[in-house]
Image (cartoon, rainbow, N blue to C red):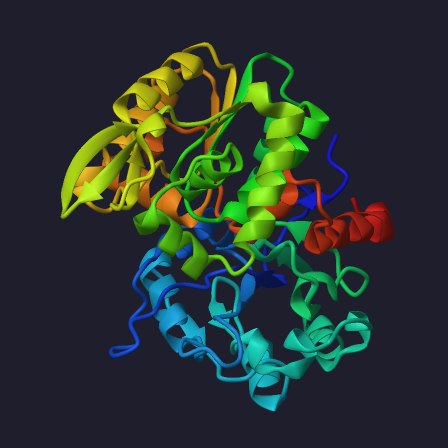
Length: 409
């Protein structure tokens, strides 16, 4: 039984519905065009279901000091394309211009307000979110507040948590699916459960690995990408100048991360699978070597074929799999084999399959494998926080609002 409101709990027809989305997207610095529409597509169902409401969309783009910290006019245009209906942009959040635009909305119309992070009440405030002008002014005009921004659910900011007592705060369809599917994986009882952790977000992967093994959430972790390099270093392997230079340059705290990897191996060594062979980049060409033959002056770009086949065999029996991170530099065709083979090992299994992380999604899209997954998470930091059992302020706010407005259900 859910302990938060969903969109099934209310009738939104002719109501003013404030909808917080997360469409923070890569933007071409020259043209200002948005380069990837996937986060917009993720909110399609929520917004389409509100076709008879007066819809006010709130969102952010980037953060102060970044080149892509821009107004949301292009975002309104993308939503216009996706919804097949004009989404008007107002360069204001809670003052006269925005208030007038909201008051003039008719049922079936969509309005997008200014980048929420343009306002200090959103980005700088650490407490008293409910007493902000954003909440006070917009809650006077709204009937309901839908939070569909799972990718920002680990943040504690005004538009994510501030409306919980001002209006009934409701999980949008994306938020609901993320909570449901990730909880389903964490609580899934059939065994074995496998986590595939690759890519370059080493600190995040070590955090998840520790939590998963400590709680018994998974039975095995298969490592690839830069994550695997840290476990190899923790085992005492010298990688060689090509890879070690990259590690030292990319991770200021690499010694601390190696130390964390050592601790994990000491506690859970048999449950953490590491590559037995790797692929080095010899002037653009692929060459497989055993890890015993390290160090190499050439950088490591992929897991080896023997490792990929071993991982496939482990995945065959899995009842639930979570995939976060590619096995190597999949963007270069010469070094994509490890990623391709392991990802194929995941999809050829009838297990519950969940994937997340920007590079993972990019790899799945490139390989045409997305359709084989039960759920692909939109979260980056939010996904890591959720899986690691950390505090999720936006989800807490949904639960608090449910308690506060429970009598309305």
